[in-house]
Image (cartoon, rainbow, N blue to C red; front, side, top):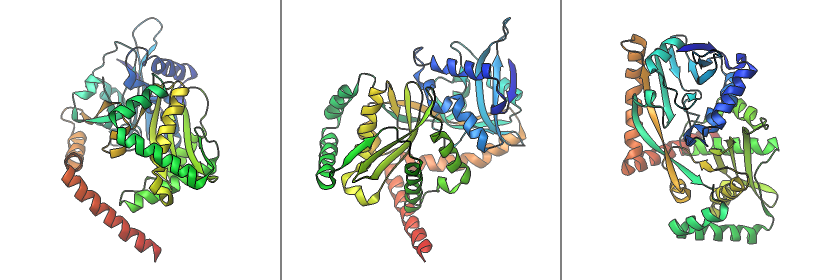
Length: 371
């Protein structure tokens, strides 16, 4: 392989165009899992503006024009430990490539100076990487390519009680609060700050790690919110009642995929299930906007099971340079943590107990912060 490695800001205009064109064709070529906006050059470049460890490997063919045939974004420590761009934050990872391109994972890691490359949302169809996967997980999707009415009809059939209850709650919200409206692409940055504040409070309330306590993540989301040109864009969707936001979601879109990322709502309106109402409006607006499907992301959630029409598969694991001491040490340190987490998540009783424990810790943390 002919591989050159660059910071994302040093990619040429021709290379960025080749990457965008390559990804734009994946949906029509039947590789829909590669159409996700987390695999777009704009996402990698945005992360690169807030982290110094981001790199992109450009793979070229051996033809006379020396054209790019693949782009491999990653993060790298000074010891050669590689991670997917935005590991733990991005919901789709991998190598973006032309159809029919095959690569050797060991050769690629060597060219990138990586001892190991870790992933947790590897897109399906990445066979050289999938061979090293330690687990495969469902990522629920809402298919709206046949239109909103078709999706709603399917939802009434497969989740009749859920659909009936959610639509009834929206009517009740309208009766009790009058001015209810939905904005699919809200451009008011104050609404984005509200989403991040709600999400931070939710993380703390449920005992989870607060992503928005990390300054670079807040800055990344604000950066992506202001990216609003071409097929890639940050989309902030807001449900308002009485002129105030009651539920909102910030995600990313490509030409055919809306990646659901940060949903949140005002707990004062929880009896109306405003987050569910919001997702139905998102599906309707996405269908009108030419989106094929909404990717709800990996993770077991009751609302995802109710809304979904199908699932994609994503993998987690490590690609390791053979006998490399850094790779062996990294896997030995990380593997037990991942195995324990996946065991808990895959067993409902263990998950419920862990969830109750985390929420209890969250309540203690909230009380401590109030003093």
